[in-house]
Length: 156
Image 1 (cartoon, rainbow, N blue to C red):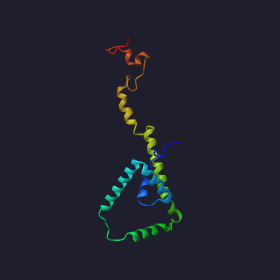
Image 2 (cartoon, rainbow, N blue to C red):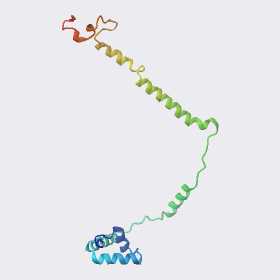
Image 3 (cartoon, one colour):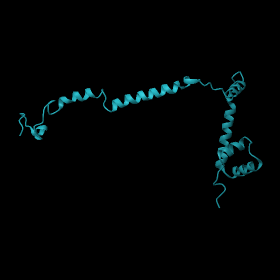
Image 4 (cartoon, rainbow, N blue to C red):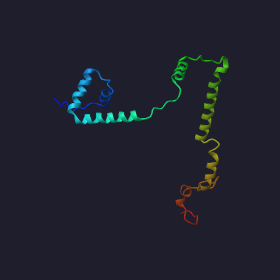
């Protein structure tokens, strides 16, 4: 069996003991533990010191009671508000605008991703670096690659 002093009182038990919120059985158990455990007695002394420091703080007041204001707002939020439905085709306008925007965005993204008109100028600009000029024919496999030509341009 374990030593009863290995299990210490929790902070919530010590706080409840200090505030006299424990029932008689729990209070007796904590008092017996505090009598034999210097560690928990020191923690209780720290809690007492902290409570005394809090008691010394000045009391601040707002100058008015906000309970009525808060209660009124809570009651107002609790009441269900009637929902106004737009009748006929006007109720579908937000849905139609959203669908139209989605389709337009999809078309624009597809044009960019699949090389629409925006990709053509880039490809035309890169044709300057091709080994064979535009419209030229490749006379043979060796002529199509730069490694088949020497520095003078004659093919080996």
